[in-house]
Image 1: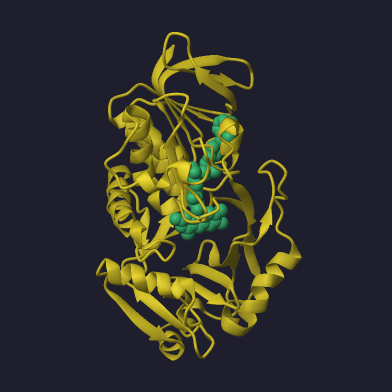
Image 2 (image 1 turned 45 degrees about the vertical axis):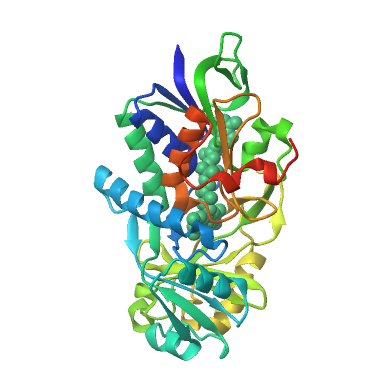
Amino acid sequence: MSYEAIVVGLGAHGSAAAAVLARRGLRVLGLERFGRGEAHGSSGGWSRMIRIAHYEDPSLVPLAEASWDRWLALGDEVGTTLLQETGGLYGGPPGHAVLEGSREGAARHALAVEELDAAEIHRRWPIFRLAEDATAIFETKAGVLHADRANAAFLEVAERAGADLRFGRRVIDWRPAAGGGFEVEDVDGSVVGGDHLVLATGPWIGDLLSDLRLPLQVERECPCWFTPTVDPSSVGADRLPIWVMVERGTAYYGVRHDPAVGLKVSIHHWGTFGGPDEIDRVVGDAEIERIRAWMRIRMPAANGPLAHARVCLYTNTPDGAFILDTHPAGPGVAFASACSGHGFKFAPVIGEALADLALTGTSALPIEGFRAARLVAR
Ligand SMILES: Cc1cc2nc3c(=O)[nH]c(=O)nc-3n(C[C@H](O)[C@H](O)[C@H](O)COP(=O)(O)OP(=O)(O)OC[C@H]3O[C@@H](n4cnc5c(N)ncnc54)[C@H](O)[C@@H]3O)c2cc1C
């Protein structure tokens, strides 16, 4: 059986692309190495932040806004809440990129934001006891994406539109087929053909694109959830905005208390790297202590028993931006490395962009700056 489109990797971006392609009427095959709902890559877990005043690159603001609307529409379509609006707080010492980048993104795109000092932040959310010189940008249009639910929603939409999604299928190779289109080979030796191909294998993307020598680094992250020492509502932990706070060069971030899982507090960029199949999947005491050392001073009421800890992977580019491109082996093959620790929120538009790239080689979405050529000589 031959397909009109094959998607390899069904994390947030591959499952979004499969949904878009199937909805455009193509006969779609999706192949995922692990089981449905298992997450060994980057997309698993309960929550991801969606920020609009994107400090990494103000030019991402329109893509974040477009994604926001698509998340709401996807939630309506599958009949569940995927995006909870909480507001967002991004700050640190004067001059830091998180603060200045958020300010610049907001100014350039006329976003409604407030500037809050440490005292005002404490007044609104008493759980924070920030450094006196800390300042933050607060935006109301920001929130929490329910990650596992969101991934399941894309898969549901893809299957409803007729996609054939297969799990426990590890692709080891792909190549142009003699008669046109592409062949994809599974680890068990089976080969399947397709007219168009999307490669969205997250931290494993280098395995299927080794000829491109993409300069990617896989980083081990350890998100943690804690049980506050006091009633969460007494310190505002149950109504926190999503937040990113920088102190002495380290960015801490978190999500409001959820009675089912706890209060998320973590570090953005832990700084340990390795291959996705070799990385230690157990969070160690020293890592939890790194978060506690900051919480003891800045969020003492958060520093209760550990509720959960897990390992998740970032796939970083040298410039922190994404890679979205077609393969030089021919039009019809699109690939993504859309992480660097901030790609989840964009999944609805990245799915569209991947579908556009695989079908036409280009996209009306503003993604030209994500071509791989900026990082590698072809
Ligand atoms: C701790 C953490 C916190 C984050 N926080 C945020 C946040 O707040 N906001 C935000 O926007 N982003 C955030 N991100 C980033 C975001 O989660 C990622 O950008 C996004 O999930 C990447 O999705 P993906 O589909 O590209 O990769 P993945 O989710 O890794 O999906 C790739 C899939 O391909 C499969 N696969 C791999 N190799 C093969 C193969 N050979 N054959 C078949 N299948 C294969 C894998 O099993 C996997 O399911 C965070 C990431 C982490 C780890």
